[in-house]
Amino acid sequence: MHAANPLDDPTADPFQVAAAAASVIAETTGVERHDIALTLGSGWGRAADVIGETTHTIAAHEVPGFSKPALEGHVGTLRSIALPNGKRALVIGARTHYYEGHGVRRVVHSVRTAAAAGATTMILTNGAGGIRESWTAGTPVLIRDHINLTADSPLEGATFVDLTDLYSARLRALAHSIEPSLDEGVYVQFRGPHYETPAEVQMAKAIGGDIVGMSTALEAIAARQAGMEVLGMSLITNLAAGIQQTPLSHEEVIEAGRAAEPVISALLARIVAEL
Image (cartoon, rainbow, N blue to C red; front, side, top):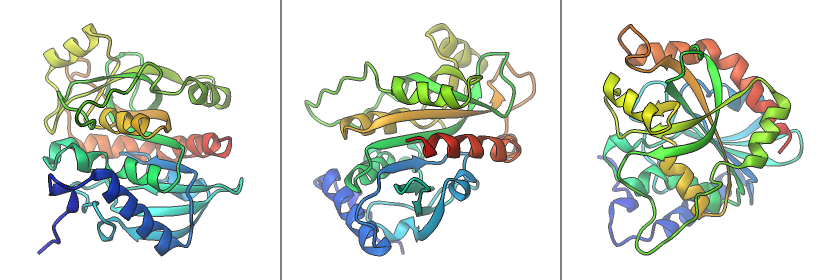
């Protein structure tokens, strides 16, 4: 039997649960404050090995509010990493996806925990489908903006948060200074877990989308609510349905991520080193 997740109690305060999680992380690692947090999605995992020295690895489900990962290709750990510049990074390999059906509180718990742990910069990465035909599998793309098609929000009650500059122009400029060839695009979060139909991809394109996926947007909103500066990056693991002529598969996503991992991990490490 798994212990009940405190976030499943509708009367619980999600920020108190995040504070409790941050307290456990601080106690377990001996690190009072983490400066930067990274959520590493499909294809980005190796970045944790190259950005600095991992001093502690925690099984995420031992920390209040976290769950075991639902999917192969997603690791279920939290890592405390000492960066070469003297800062501390908290690497989240325990993303809860919206399609798992646990509710938005659990989807954004990692972000709120990172904020409670002291992080002021949140780097959100994912593997996603590309709408632009010029992109090939393995292309990293900066997220300039997003369209949230989940019909949901991590904000509760009369909580109004400005999302005008959600994906930091400063951090995108920093990324461009390190890799000038980086493209930017608008990320469209669908509910999942099914891939989009060709017609849905054309809809996403028509409303201004360039990238389609099943994560990130809700997390970014929660990060902004917490006052964090957000950098979003997608690894294009395949062209989206109807753009690509062959059927989509999770295996293809994993394989594209594996092939691109050394390059994008090194790129992310260079960006983190400048933060």
